[in-house]
Each structure stands twice: as structure tokens, then as C-alpha cells.
Amino acid sequence: MSKPRKTVQSLRSQLWFNAPKSAGDHKRRRIRQAGFTTEDFKDKPVIGILSTWSDFNTCHAHFPQRIEEIKRGIWQAGGFPAVIPLQSVSESFSRPTAMLYRNFLAMEAEEAIRSHPVDGVVLLGGCDKTTPGLVMGAASAGVPAIYVPAGAMLRGHWRGATLGTGTSTWQAEADYRAGLLTQSEWEDLSQSSVRSTGTCNTMGTASTMTTLVDVLGLSLPGASSIPAIDAEHARMASAAGRRIVEMVWEDLTPKDIVSTASLRNAVITDMAISGSTNSLIHLVAMAGRLGHDLSLADFGDASEGIPVVCNLMPAGQYLMEDFHFAGGIRALLGVIAEHLDLSVMTATGRTLSEEIAGAKVWNEDIIRPLDKPIYPTGALVVLKGSLAPRGAVLKRSAASPELLRHTGPAVVFKSYKDLHDRIDDPALEITRDSVLILQNAGPIGAPGMPEWGMLPIPKRLLAEGVRDMVRISDGRMSGTSFGTCILHVCPESHIGGPLGLVRDGDLIRLDVDARQLDLLVDPKELEARRAAWQAPKPHYERGYGALFSRHVTQADQGCDFDFLADGEATLDPEVH
Ligand code: FES
Image (tube, rainbow, N blue to C red; front, side):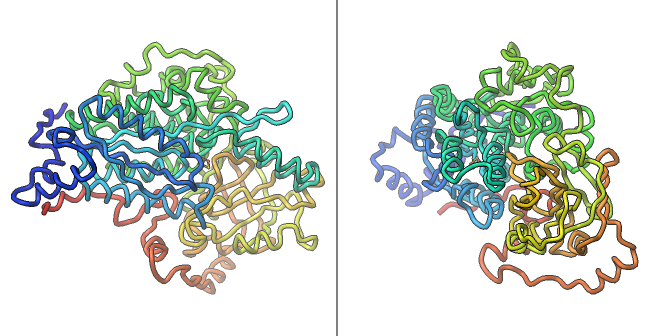
């Protein structure tokens, strides 16, 4: 049932601007200080533009221009725009890992909304963690919000080949380490892979998350695949500015838009696009903020019924730009329509069914028909077993088929530093059948669950032509990565999970068809190891790191903070 339209008197910003006595006058005076007249903002919805721009987030370098275009749309529709900069959570520059700061961004977005006189917000993000962070914060704040995705960068080219961000450079890096590329060839290729601003152009985490947020109805439908520097992207930005003003009058919030059915649509789409494994964590966290339960089992179930029809790297061969001109997400949703509930709401106020009507596939090699997928069902699988009692994740579509059923002896690395210190040590006892284990890469143990899960293959084995091995960790993997990498092992080793009890030579059995991951060690021996296990010292004693370590949940719960995951937004405090 639709809500009553907002009136000027019921706008949240009026709490500030029409506050009694001198309080309201002070707020109006201070806006005029910036050169505005009373007519510029009087009785208008105030729209916050939450921007994750910084010079360190090179995927967002076009945001200053996009902000002007969003403002144009807001003015046109009778709103008053106000930019609120947030931290930019650059995937490339944030250390120890951008994931440590996703929840920080979510808190910052929620509090920025709560503490300012905004009636609605435009969320401007795209680089991996910015999408879930902004959506989580806006969902908790509970005001109307529309997401403007950064758009992907242009495709890369090198010596006649097409390069996809991340995927192609990971492959080339292995060749470089194996001595097949010179230093200058490697640098030339690396530079050629990043031709413009915009997010990674493979179906990595950034594109997966912007696609899924599009499917959830939180962007203008189809916005997610528009290339970052295309004029269409600028037009989409100003259209979003116009639309958010109307959403304020309609009081259309993220919780009004996203339903259990739209979350299920997102999970199904995630399988059809062979989305990033990171999406499992982010979707669970976003669902929690939106008031819905989503579990790893929901992904496992969806995975069984839907093939991969989107032929994009790393599972396939094309890039986001190609996807857009093949019809983009609206066309893809048309292909998988029989698996979806198209009656769900979108940010436009229309249903998904109305929004994808007429969308066509223009290239059936890029967006395949259901009966000609690039991969059958089960692209992302959830594994359980004695090594991962609460679950682990494998992107089967990017793994080596011959390794999906494998038993091998563990080669254990206690930390990322230990891994890099010893992986190329000629004395390391390792064969192509070994199973590489990385401990202490989880949410608390690393900290922040970095993308260390695509463990490097030892140089010696690379030179022998080995390009994949079974690799297991409680960390994550870049969405642009590939290989038989089992990730998100839960509970993590740092808090006493079985992964932390593995020792060199223990046999590990992976059986993907049976969805099993087991540590083949005698239970009595394992019990003795557990009794002797001592919790490592915490990484942080103070500051945000300490807050993170004390309150972050495990991967199967979305790694949100326990004190933010549930509950309603706090009411606006009285304004003075
Ligand atoms: Fe920003 Fe990949 S580094 S999207």
C-alpha cells in the first residue's frame, strides 16, 4: 500500500529550517552564508549527495563532474542539493583492506544522514565496498535513497588482446613470475589494463554489487552497466537527481523498495552473472539492514537452479562495456525472467516487470539464452564439512574442473607474511597435489578479511606449467580472480575454527558435487589440538580497529557489526 505523499510541513529538513525561535533562523542564515537566497531552499526537499570521491579512489575520479549533473537534476525537480563527502574506501589504496572500512562507511553514511537536514539522499559509489557500505547506511537511516553507480572503466587493450581489469593482470602476473614476460612488458600490459576512470570492468565485486543493487531496485533500472565516461552516464546521474526529489514526496525508502522477493531476485541474478564471491557477504549484510534474513543456504539453493548466461570475465570472455551494448542488466533479466518475481518495486515507483519491458538482447554470445549458458548450474557453491562447519564458498565457474574432487596434503601458512616469506622457498615441500592453506585471513584474524584467497602458486610449480591448485583460506578473493580457491571458511581460524588446527601434511578432502570440505584427521587428535590451541593476541587495543574486532560478525552473517545489523533507525534527535 502506498504511503501518503509528504507535505512541506512533514519534510525532515523543516525540523532544522523551521525550528522555533533563533534555532531555525540560525540554520537559514548559515545556508544564505553560502550565497543562496531563501527562495533557493524554502519549502524544498533537501537532497544529500553522499559522495565517496577522493584522489585516492581513482575509480571515482569522474564524481566531481557527476555531482554537478546530479545537482542539475535536483534543481530541475525542485529540490535543494547538498554534497556530503564520506570516506572513499578505495579498493586499491585502503590498507590493510578496504573491507575493514565497509562498516565504517556504513556507519558514516547513516550518521551523516541522521545528523544533517536531508530529506533524501543520492548515494554515489561503485568501487567494491562503497556500494554495500552506502546501501547499508542508507537502509538503516531510513530516508528515501537512490544509488548512482560509478560505471565501469573502458576495456583494456594490449598487443591485439582485450584486457579485463584484475583478471588479465592476475594471469599476466603469473606469466611474469614464471619468466614468460619481461619487466617492461609486464608494466606496459599492466598500464594498458586501466584506460579510464570507472570501476573494474570485469564482473568483479564492483560490477557484481552495482548490478545486484540495480536488481534490488535501488538504482534507476539499467544504470549499473553504463560505462563511467559515457554521456549516457551523465544523463543517468541527472535523471537520478530528478527522481530522488519525487521519491521524497512519495516517501519511498529502501525498505519500501526491497522485499524478500527482490532479494531472491538478486541472489538468482548473482548466479546468472557468476558474480563475485564477495557478494555473498555483502548481500547478507545489506539484507539484514533492510530487515530481511538471508543465509548461505539461500545462495546454495539458488545456485542449483540457474545457469551462467552472462559471458563476462572472469568466468567468461567479455567485459562490462560489451555487456551494456548487448542489452545490459534489463536484457539479462528478461532472459532469466522465468526464475524471477518481476512484480517487485523499483526506485522509479514502477515494477521490475514494467522496467524491463521491451529490453532486448543484441548479442547472444554475451548474454546467452538459458539453453546455451557459458556454465551450467552451480556457479557459486557453498561447502560445509569438518573444515568449515558454518560454511565456505567456492566460485566453481572460475575453478579447474579436475580439482573439484581432490584429496591432498596440506601445506600450511600461519599468516599472509608467512605465505610470502616461504611460498617461493626452494626448500618448501610442495607438489601440484598439495592443498595450500592460509590461516588468520578472516574478519578478525587478518584483520578485515582481505582478498588474499587466491594464494600464489609457487614459482617452481608455475615454471612446470601449474596454473591452479586447491587453495583454502578464511579470507576473501577479488571478484576478478579465479582458480580453485575456497574462501570465507567459517568460523575463522583466529577464533578457534578448525582451519586454525590444520598442520602440514594433514589430508584435506574437497568434494564439490557433495558440497563437502573435510579435514581428514582423527577426531581425538583434533580434540588434543583444540585443547592446546591458544587465542592469538588482538591486533588492536584502541580506535576503530578495536571496535571492529570486538563487534564484527563472521562471514556467514555478512561481517556486519553486531550492534548495527538489526533494528530500526534511531529517531531524529530534537533539533536546537
Ligand atoms: Fe575500484 Fe576495482 S579497484 S572497482
